[in-house]
Length: 120
Image (cartoon, rainbow, N blue to C red; front, side, top):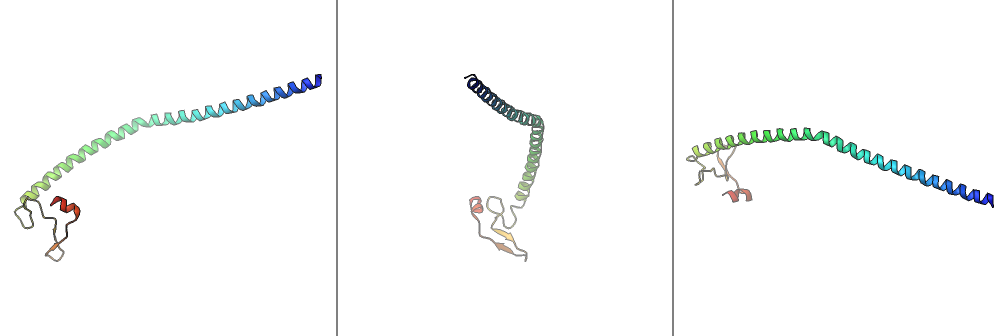
């Protein structure tokens, strides 16, 4: 009887030890996974100032490009207005996109596309 009681206690202790060990391993895996999450968040937080600086630089370049394109568009309007009395001009002062100069020196006619028809 003592031997049976000792064997049952030994098996119970062994079972508690196995369960405890399994729970500890699971806790360590969870802590390691959260450590990786914390590491990724820290890396991303470190990159935010660089991303912000890059976005600000891009905005500056965009503003600069907008200014250049605005000046270019003004130049194009002046050039079109100056040539509006010339051949190939439409009634609104814009060039007729259906008439293109050909490589042979003459004027080649092109069928307007849907994009051109909306502008005409």
